[in-house]
Image 1 (cartoon, rainbow, N blue to C red):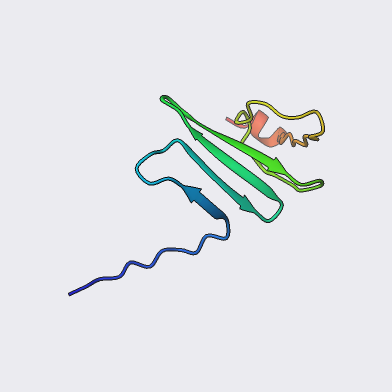
Image 2: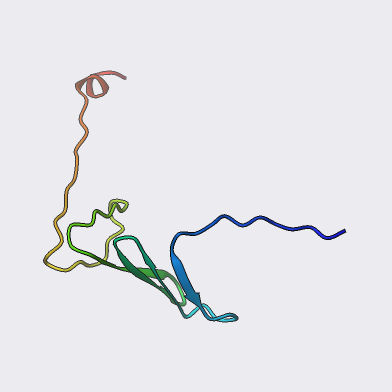
Length: 84
């Protein structure tokens, strides 16, 4: 009996050499990316078109170009501060 596994569609186009995890590159609506696989970690480089939003985890960004504008939020609650 043959079984077929359904794989989710990926809207990003990818190019990857089989058998090695050196570089993975691709494009998405609004820019392109490159994944560099290293011995101890992996680095994602993203190139964005003008005015394209990008969301990342706090502390995850290694570097950025001077044209990038950062926005952040601070959440504070007096209720949590005074309750035990």
